[in-house]
Image (cartoon, helix red, strand yellow):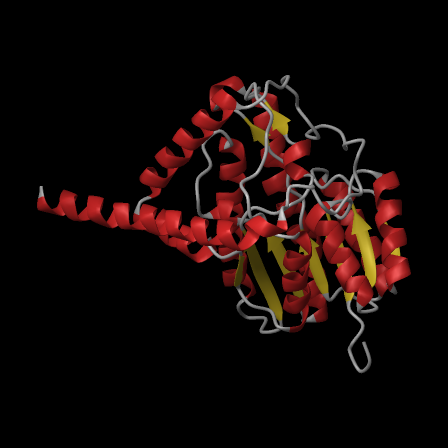
Length: 325
């Protein structure tokens, strides 16, 4: 893009989904990119698409649960890029199933990747930002940072934890006016993540209609590189979902639990699996999950908004009744 400043960007979880889409979006603007994920083969494929789009790319296979590996990633990125303008902490995995039926090792792995992994990212790059006196740390959270997800308890714990992490880091970084901690809260996104997740439900997983294109999330992250902001919600129902959690968190959790139980009781059978929790998936390097149906997008967004408003209204009525008792 003529006249624009070339961005120097690090992306973890870059081998598929939102991470890969964001890498390609930055590449189209001529960015210099350091891409990290567990699979070298998948990173090679994404890197090639980025180079074809106009970006300059270094891949560094990294498991973000390994603090030393992430520290090495930061050192290599700064050496190769010269400086780091934006670090996108994007790794996210999950395991679906009733809490007591999911192996505790799987719950632990979700926390290690989704929360400790982001802690490792921030711990590695913030000293670089402080030395530079500038930089943007983008924390991929999801609306799961506000809405509890029964049947995905460890995922919920990790996302609620990430929201607290960002708030704490913003407090610590307040003296540095040019260092920004940015949260991103998309609703459901059409990525391979749900297919790659651990599954202990007994049924095949899917997503609701109207899921977001990962490229729309990527565009929002690219915008943050030019115009940082504390929180960015993506997807029509996101703001309403935040309000629902504030007004009636237990009601929304009960509604979700009922929905999950009903869905999996009717879903096609599927064997138990830990998915990609402990090893990269064999079908990595894909941006899309293949769940989108264009004709459903507007209708589904409207339905989602109505349902969420109903949850909020129910919560308000419930709180009023309690005050009268």
